[in-house]
Image 1 (cartoon, rainbow, N blue to C red):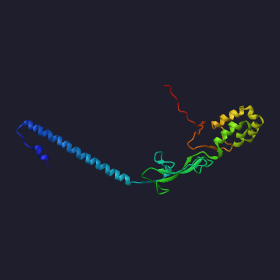
Image 2 (cartoon, rainbow, N blue to C red):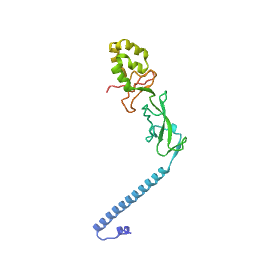
Image 3 (cartoon, rainbow, N blue to C red):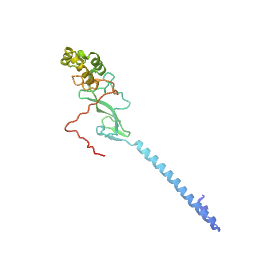
Image 4 (cartoon, rainbow, N blue to C red):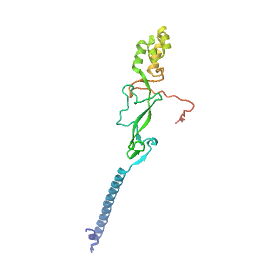
Length: 213
């Protein structure tokens, strides 16, 4: 072992001082190496314990950040409606979700579960078709007939689209998606397309106060 050499006696004071200094440096390096080895072993033990640890929980009560919804490997978009599969008139769709690592759902006994997410219920009305009808045949009320407004369609037909003023107004209203199908459904348009979400306010809407800087 090299450690006893640190305590070798020397009549020369300079040699003794140098020997003691090297001894202290050696001890510090040895302790630092031991601490590093101990720290790495502790991390390996904690990582192995965490990898084997699972927690069973009701996944309906998971918080944001504890799950991904919908499941990234799940094709949840209906190609016909361009909305989540199973979208209902209540604008909700039940899709497959993925819980975070280490969480097991009590209802499925694995890390997947089903959850309702918001969607836009469609009933066969295409946004592109409606806009083209409004631009080229709006003076005859074709767009209003298509959307399910026969009275307005007849009125536009008999007045040539209110002398084209009504046609121009409908083009703007349809392009901004303010006017939609009469049955309350949404337009069929690409899921990741240029959809507009109209934000409304009521007596229960909280407005964040704006302070002058």
